[in-house]
Length: 119
Image 1 (cartoon, rainbow, N blue to C red):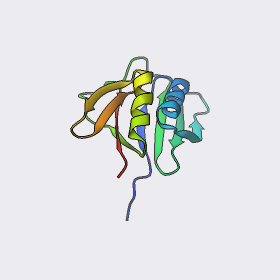
Image 2 (image 1 turned 135 degrees about the vertical axis):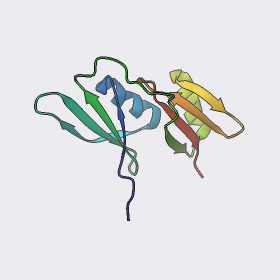
Image 3 (image 1 turned 180 degrees about the horizontal axis):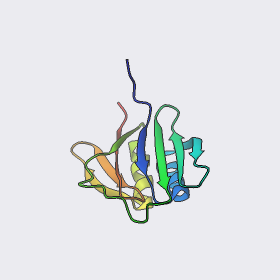
Image 4 (image 1 turned 90 degrees about the vertical axis):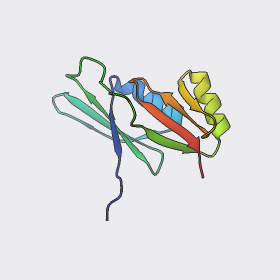
């Protein structure tokens, strides 16, 4: 049997991305792995259950090509209204579907992340 261990996204600025995911979703650093030669840095963030792996690559000198950007991570919250208000204040809501009860935020690297009510 398998279970999902983590999800990875690549980022352009590790410190800013860590701060973003902390503020937007309350994710905290779990651990990190840095290359001895400084060529990469991997930081694992968690909410206690879910693990998001952020990877920074020294050689990446341009924004990542996200294609049609249809892939995303879905975050569920017990306080949808407070989350929506926080993300609205942060200016990061990029799409809302009120009929479905979801909205998407855009992070610093252009990734869209879904926010919905917890079941």
